[in-house]
Length: 252
Image (cartoon, rainbow, N blue to C red):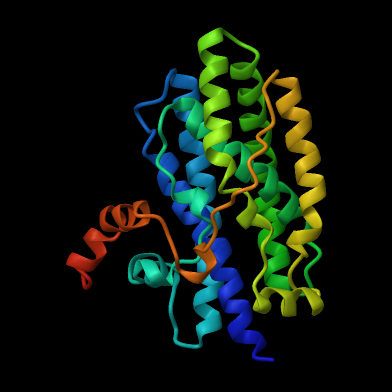
């Protein structure tokens, strides 16, 4: 087993999730519905970018080519990114953003908690730091799902629509590649498929608390780990990567 290559791809996936979702949330800076939540989303974005740096720095070391987080964030093409599709979906309105964050946070808090038990010391250390931040993200998005769902008729309608629209991207969180399955067997990665029942239990409980309806559609989108993305990722990368690609030798 080429464990180093498998681990590189797995770490890249985790870094890409944090990087792309962090960039998406940063688009809310200065545009939040109220100042407090504008700041909250900006802080969550910064947390995710910080996590992306840790994951991508480790991935760079795994290449054996002296690459760092900037190389991997700014000098890869879209087909090389391995993030979940849900992380690249546009913000939409506030309820859409909350729905996207809600589904991802519920997965991320379970995954990072399990990842703390990894036999890979670096991954375990990253997960321990990330889990503290992700636990706050989970509380924040969960509270907003309940607040909007059990709020006015308009907020309820928008929150339900956001939940329904984002649902099709959640199945990908529990699909594992053959490489990931090999790392699970080595106790380096947690078994994502085994987290699904607990994730669904949390989702159902919070959606019930929000007086919303649980989506029932079985159709799911996937492909992010294999480099098959929505059209939106290209626009994100065009904006995010423009400066370092236009001036690759620039020093600040």
